[in-house]
Length: 166
Image (cartoon, rainbow, N blue to C red; front, top):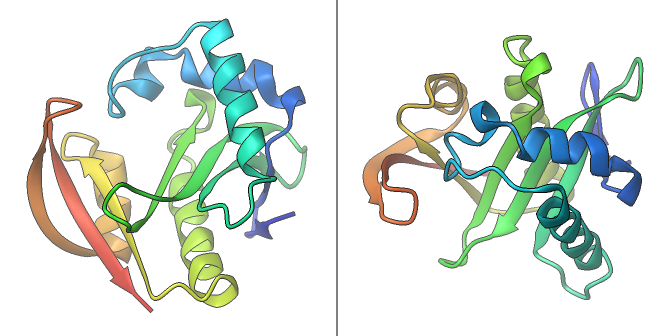
């Protein structure tokens, strides 16, 4: 177990997560604010295999974990803490559509903030979100410091950029 919250357990992904992982990554609504592209089963299988390889990499700074319900152990999404191309520790999450609008996004974000600062002793974390992703904007507005809006050329959208310091 990486960390827990009131209703969630955050753990390493395993290859047994491939079916719900694929369901999430192949859902247009889930992927609409992260580039909009859905992925085939084979693409998701390769992606999951690559994520699993990072777990054994010395000095790894690319962490993607499974989010599961504590009560049922059901996979509901992923949460990430990665060092981006700017050298920032960036957070993110995705949830299966079935679990939207139940407070899990805010809960996992708060849990990840606590983990990043208290367990990993990071000094600062950042988040980027498409300004049209209203739910995630609300979560970040309530927990992070908004810095600015910037054009995201790769995803052809306007991102809101947030920072939070320990």
